[in-house]
Picture 1 (cartoon, one colour):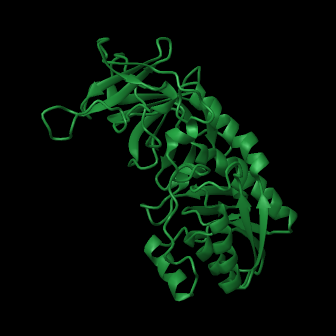
Picture 2 (cartoon, rainbow, N blue to C red):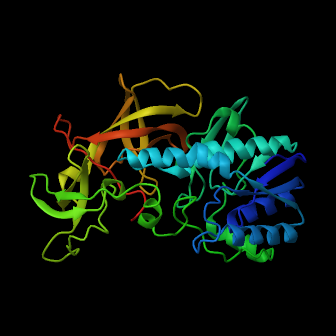
Picture 3 (tube, rainbow, N blue to C red):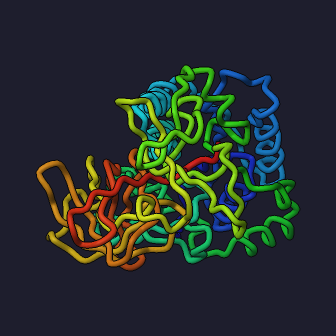
Length: 380
């Protein structure tokens, strides 16, 4: 955080992380203004919508800290820039990650613009990440608490978006954040972390998706073509998914569990296999498109870097090369279920370099033997 007094506009969500971010900025002597972002309003009266409760909590935190709070409605921007893309991807049989778009299009675009209009020198959020500045260049670094690092979701930010941003929690462990909140008497100190997709929350995902994507039942088949069950619609499954197939199979039991291995869009068929180690669920090569480099330009390629194909996976060594369609990552070890529509996020040590949209994954070895794999981003 800057040592001089500045006007900082903080995204105050009503959770413990953003609460402590605002508190630390206030303690550092800055003029702090809280902004509560309302990004979804289609079902405010739904049992799963927590925006009203979150606004009450944000207001209570602002009162304890002694800062102003403004509620701003970005629902129209969210529907146009994030939700529309979310639906397009699901209808195309891919598995999108709207949290990434929410950060690049809402929290660090619409909110950033609003904060600057309020005269902010900087904006801040409760994300677990760090920014390192070297002259005019800003680098996105992993958080000190590796278990909470959120750079995966921030990898599409630009230099212009990172330049005025502070992440006050970047050097703190999550347990310390809760201690600070409790010691300061913040009403959110014990509030449970939110889970689920940013606008869906913890509602049943299939129930939500059914409002917008029609069910188109079809066969569940083995790679050999044997029908073993029926699915309710390809959009309702993600490759790598185990739960919700209705095919039985108990871990450690006499029959191995079933996993989704591929989607055959032409036949409206869901390809399923048995066993987590089935070769169709693993890939060493990932094809990606729409690469975004945080620095604004690509490093020298080919390059040996580390990458994640899912948020919760460990960094994995790979070689990145440019291809006519985009980029290819070739991993030293097979990766479980890279997901078309999800993101390949690249790292050089602690520095997040950027990422690309996964188009396909293949090859469980260095040969050209094709393998299609996709991972479950949100359980259904």
